[in-house]
Length: 449
Image (tube, rainbow, N blue to C red; front, side, top):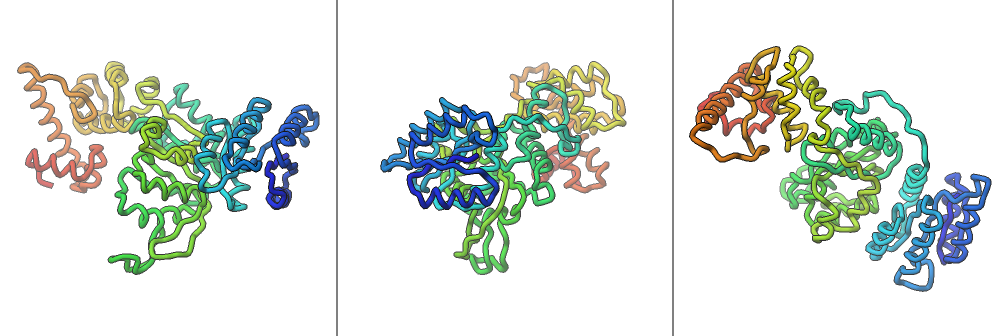
């Protein structure tokens, strides 16, 4: 049963009709006392059909326009029945008040005037997340590329299984190189949207001046060079999932535009005044401490609470060292063996670049050694100092080692070029560097492609 709390009888009536058509049992209240009485009655009910599954509450249900009465009622409900999810309704200009409500325990908030389809989706999501269902076992295909058996990773995948079936927005946190996009893809593959598009956007690499044209698209003639209509990333993801990577790097002006799309699920192409509606599941990722960014006024608080209904934190590789041997074998392939000493040395490294750094190291070892059995000496020879490792003071006794490592790097590039038959894109991928970095190193060592 859904309990509606609003002092406007017309709103209670329209919501009741909407929810009843969607198959829900509905009860309504015009004020705090009536609502609390309904909650207490629900707690005493022996019949599950008489229990409240969700509350839909207007922040300004009383004559007060401050919304404080709504916050007070919310906190009382959370004391009486903390398990009941609450969705708040508020005007666009009162979103900061709704954010306060989320902090006080509300599951979500919608702005007036609401979209019926969006509201029903949020209700289904909130109810689904509040139900304590046993995890359903799935095959490994949705977790393609996610390697490991550690307790930390197991807990992450359990959460993925649980939230994937909903439309809840998910925020994936973790250091660079921990595999956040793989988790986002797993959520999509396990969802009801799996047959629809998965669109990934690296917001950190998107210039502010290109944000609207890239995300919203444009029509012919919208600006110089716009020779034809082009859909944006949101439109491409319609009915599917959009993955917003590095959302913590989004500048303040773009954050406002992003919030409106995520809240209203509508946007306008550049050069067009007709709003377009999209039905999308939103998954975001960041390596930024967003709560700290909010405190420092670098990230909007209302956007933060819009994207992190569910937060999944990926542990760093140093926190799941037992997975390193499995990852090494995965990256090396079945035709390569590692001696126990070699594997122990690999497992002992700090890997500030996490899984990405490990993958690049394994590729470098295979290229430099050219062997099918890798020893600890082979590993040591490829432990090249780079931007991911802190430099140590160089003494005269280590100068020759640095020179030797540079020679090894040159040999690795030459061998990769030979193996890839001069395909520079493949060479860069094999070495784990960009093509620009590859060309700079080739020029440094005098290597011709």
